[in-house]
Length: 115
Image (cartoon, rainbow, N blue to C red):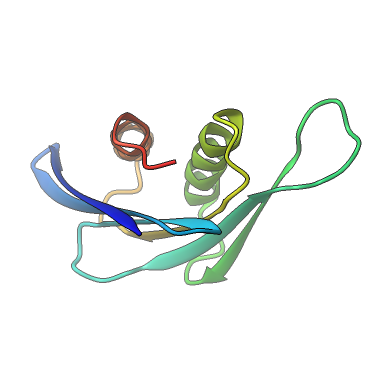
């Protein structure tokens, strides 16, 4: 297992990010509240389609936050496009659910990727 800890500050809000790589999945936790928050699961669908399709589901937490689902989709697309077959478990405990915050999280994770 590989793990990276990151600390980001965006608009004055401190965000702790942990990226852990396991044999079959990638775990990303980003928190501004010191708790796990909403937990999402994302994976590439196996099939014969020319263009890949991805499945993102909320395991626990806010189901009415489309930006959180978009964040998970961006990350699983990055993981998949690099050739990794692993799924993503994403935990987002955020005060600020803005597009800028989520873009910062995605870019921080992809810059420090463990897949």
